[in-house]
Amino acid sequence: MRNLLDVDDLAKYLKLQKQTIYNWLNQRKISGIKIGGVWRFDKQEVDKWLKSQSRKAKRGT
Image (tube, rainbow, N blue to C red; front, side):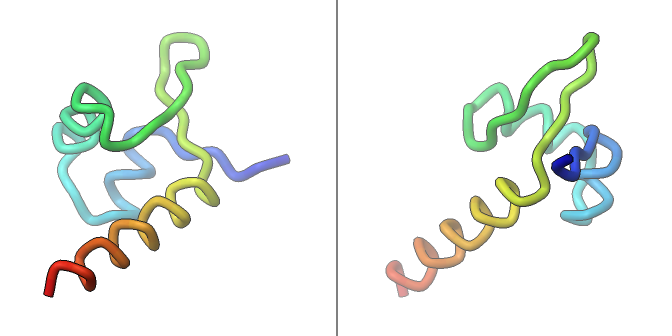
């Protein structure tokens, strides 16, 4: 089974405020799935997304 994080877990993992996670969901910067009214995030997908964001930042410099 994949490692799923909720908003609290993801905020801790990324060292961000929970509101930032909700803002990113609203802006479609990050994707998740809602299960039973709770947002869940696949840790592997989050890690891939982080790597893709890192590459974008390197291109801009």
